Image 1: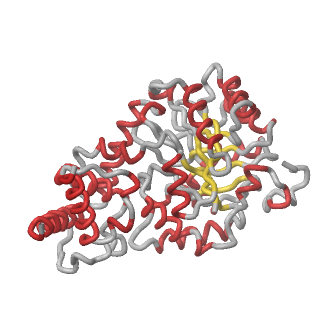
Image 2 (image 1 turned 180 degrees about the horizontal axis):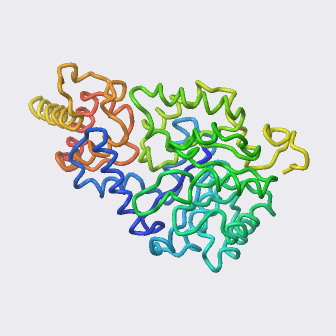
Length: 309
Length: 90
């Protein structure tokens, strides 16, 4: 099983405002579940999230049966203030970790298209640092329809690399108004020869895709973050997943958004894998193709005239 | 040592009951499977680890946050007891 949506966390790679928001989000989720006493846990939370070597992540993957994991770089520097490290340094550090575990961790570059050096950064990340795709997080002050967005996506398209876009809700210092299914589908229509992955399937917006009259064939879905949608023993997730698989056969990808839901706990990661992977055995998207471009395993696009990736 | 173990167990049980907002905690036994019973998830584990480190003054490595050590209150009590014993031995 390949996890198409995960991250590595270290405080030096993320803006302080995001880390503060993460803590508030943790407290909100905890209170929602009826748990109390969220004070004095920030230190513990960030200790558990942190991995700047890749070693704990690969250990967890071994223990829960995840063969490969896509590691997405996030860039909110313009929106929230720069992290301790520059966006170039962040890419270098994370993509180097991925290179050290090249058989297990697959790095995606991530950039705010408004950066003046976005094109240079991406070209270097793709061609020099081995990034195998592009992550966009349109939760700041830019749109998927902006010309600058098309410019950075074009760089991925020139290299036949997939683009994963965060869709749906986010932390309180960011905004989901630009992270919606419609502009995402429009962007995918403009670049029909590369796969686009709907991050989190849009969380609660997933039904927008199911109900849409036409969804481009090059759109795929990841279910990362759906851990939060679980009610009771998770029957609701299995039911929703069945509908998503039925609507888009061979186009649903397994994902975790680790470490932001599991906090690097093996037991949590294992529970998520066991809960959703086996019930849909044989139905998951072939992520190897999305990443490496093997046409014979690209179920949605292989019959599309002129769409050869 | 037995008293100390009982004390650890009771503190852990009390914490789980409080955090879970259980109206009826009678089903929670020292060998209740915490994950299976829905009493422990990743959110709760962060809080529980934080509580243990503060309450019992012991540091837990990420590798130690395993299902074996957190499966039941008994397992967690044994794990903490071992940590405290190791700490006393220096």
